[in-house]
Every structure is written in structure tokens, then in C-alpha cells.
Length: 281
Image (cartoon, rainbow, N blue to C red):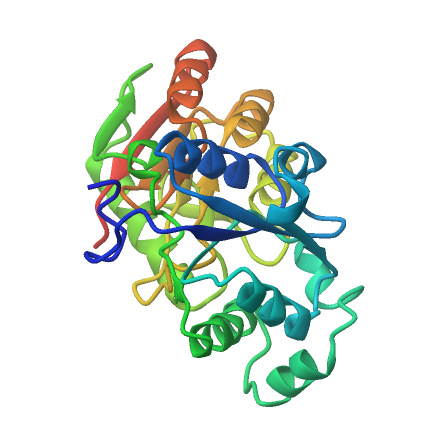
């Protein structure tokens, strides 16, 4: 089986990738192609990396403006897509400025009781599903790049079990409130909570405090729709932690993607940053 996150009846049929920014969609592309699975790309203008786009033939790629849902649905029909996967970031502020929604998206937004990434992307997934497409779990094919249980890099004495338990519970409570997927603690005090600004900007705020023995936690909420908004942890975040002297990160197993995991673990060992995988509570 190619991935435990795939439908049981999936048999290497073609996939359409809807790609945002960052290394995540490129890594996914490499893995899918290595398995010999046909892949097409829908890129988002001003979001998707040019290096990813350049790797697709013209007939296998369509570039769309963010917010053009009708064009997205028409493209999926023209691609005859049975399976779709969404990967990569969209700059958060674009949900509030520079979106330029078409009539279809305006209609979707008008029906939402709450306006956030979860409700917007959840409604988009519903529209794609109405076409007869299956939107795959965003962790599909990335089994080997997920956080695993226990100590992934051991560079110093582990935090005490009660401090880890405190951090895990606080992170998951905050995630369940749809505030954010990450927090930083010192001892049993929450120092910062990730919200709309994202992980790296939160960590930069923490760095200004110049505190020692901080722990960064990353998790998902219990009701997370894993077809979108899966947290990722990569070299950029690791290098930021190094510069800010944050030496421990606790990541929920099977829920946080370590982008290029072997390279991340190697760099963490080099930087003397401890990575710990934990089970959801």
C-alpha cells in the first residue's frame, strides 16, 4: 500500500495537485511521481513556487487566481480528476485582502456563519466533492515524513513528563478552540500562542523575550479535517528556532509533517535541537 492515509480502493489512479507555496507540494510531487502515478497541477498565482510549476508540462498545468472557484471546478472537470490533493500554504492575509472572489466564492462566503481558513477551505472541499472527486487526506504518501512517537533527536535531558503533559494539553485545548496549532511554554506557563500570523512570526515574538528552556508544541484539533490545513515543520522553522535558542519542539505524531524528514532530523542533531513526538490526548 502506498500510504495508510489513502482510501482502501485507491489503485494509483491519476491525481490533481492543488498547490500553494513552500516545499511541501514539491516533496509530495516527487514522492507521487516516484511511484509512477500520473499527476497534474493547479497552481495559485503569486503563491505556488515557480520551481514546482516548471516541472509540469503545459498540458498538465493550469494557473489560477486565488478566489476563482468556478475556474477551479471547470479545470478539475477538464482534467477528469477523480482524485485531488491539496498541499502548501496560502498567505493568510490573502483571505482578507487581495482575494478577488468570483460569484461562486461570494455565494459560498455568504453562507458561512464563521469566516476562517477552516470554513473557507471546508466549503471548497465540499464543492470539489460535488464533482465526484475524492479529496485525499493531505498526509497521503507522506507517511515517512510524519512526526513519530518518542524522541526523534536526543541532544539533552528530556523535559519532565509533567511539563510535557502540561504543554500537550494546553496546545490541544487551544487548537480545539480554532485559535491556532502551536504554542510555546516555559515550565508550566504559556508564553505565546500561534494564531493568524503563523508559526514563524509567533516564534519571533517569543525570541524577543530572551527566555531559556522554552518548548514549542505543534498539534491539530480533534475534529481536524485532514484534507487541508495539516501543520508542517521544516528547515526554515528549525533554523529560526536555532537563531532564537529554542532547543525543544514537541510535535504530534502522525499529524505534523516534517518536510524532508531525514534532512530535518540531521539538521536538528547538528543544531542540538531536541524533537519529540507525542500522542494526542
